[in-house]
Each structure stands twice: as structure tokens, then as C-alpha cells.
Length: 181
Image (cartoon, rainbow, N blue to C red; front, side):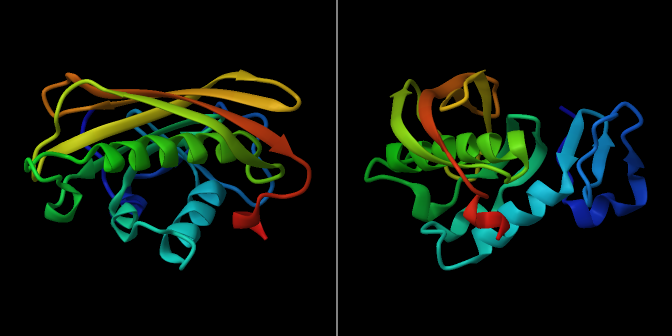
């Protein structure tokens, strides 16, 4: 990856996605190297992260490089308040990053037209993350059914080694996703 830039910085370097024949109304798809972000989805996610509904304010510092069509990729720099008593990235924060990224991937699939709720979330913590390390979190839909969504996610360190992996099962619910209303 070539590094993630905030969308505000990207404005001078953006181009419309010429390959998107099914662009959602009122949405713009942005590409920059390996970046594909649906701005309608990103706007809803940023609104949620800035609201009182977001229980972890540090998530507002996620830098998204992919947020579209059932996939989410972002980076996050580990902060002091994310550490456990051993001085390494807390397993609960690993869970929060993986769970949130999976939620964002699910929302990006239908750009908020449908809602969902988590039925199960499983994580395996394999290695530790360190203070000030920039970790990468990814999640994608691996199977999309009419009533159930199956997702997988991974959290990797700066060295490319896998820190944690997760699976999530979500129930599809009728009606628009609350972040989009």
C-alpha cells in the first residue's frame, strides 16, 4: 500500500471511477492507487463515528483506503489508551477494530439500504500490537445471503504479520440502516 491519505488531502488527486457502471445515486466513487471509497458510505460512517452512538472515540482516527461493495480497509495508529496492563494493544481494542471494520463492510454492500445486526463475532488474537504502531484492519463479506451475511477480517501490524483474525455473522434486517436516516 502506498500510504493512506485523508480525503481532505486527496481532493487535489481524485478521479471518478470510470469502471463503475452501477454508481449509486448521489454517490461519488473515488480512486487513488489502491483506494476505492464510496463517499456516501464514508459520510454515513464518519457521521456515526462522530456521534454519541460511537462508544470508542478513537475510531474517528481510522484512515480508510477501501470502503465499498462489501469490503473495508483502514489503518489505525495505536494510542496509549488502547493498551492493556502489559503495555500492548488490548484484545478488546483489537475486537473493536475488527468488529467495526466488518460493520462498515456490511453497510457498504447496500450503501445503507438495508440494516443488520450481529449474531456472532469470534476473534483469535495471535500477536501483540505496540504503542504508536500503525495497524491495518480489513474486513470483507465472504457470503451474502438474503437473511444472513458472513464476514471475515484481519488485523496486521506494520511488519505485515497477522495480529488477529475474526469472523462475524450478521442478520439482514428490513429497512434502511440507522446511519443513513
